[in-house]
Length: 65
Ligand SMILES: [Zn+2]
Figure (tube, protein in one colour):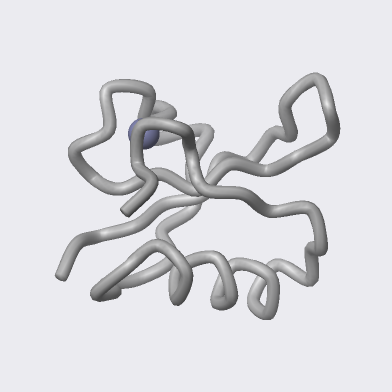
């Protein structure tokens, strides 16, 4: 289980990235949203979509399970 966060700001493609807590690209505390503790990134993604009402959500490239 890991803590997951989403960025507050979309990237250049309009996609919001979800990061695990140990990600080296984890946004700083002011520009991230805590999602919860999940066993994998797919659950973190679906929670982000539901909670933040977003459709374009992807896991960060280095946080893929
Ligand atoms: Zn990452």
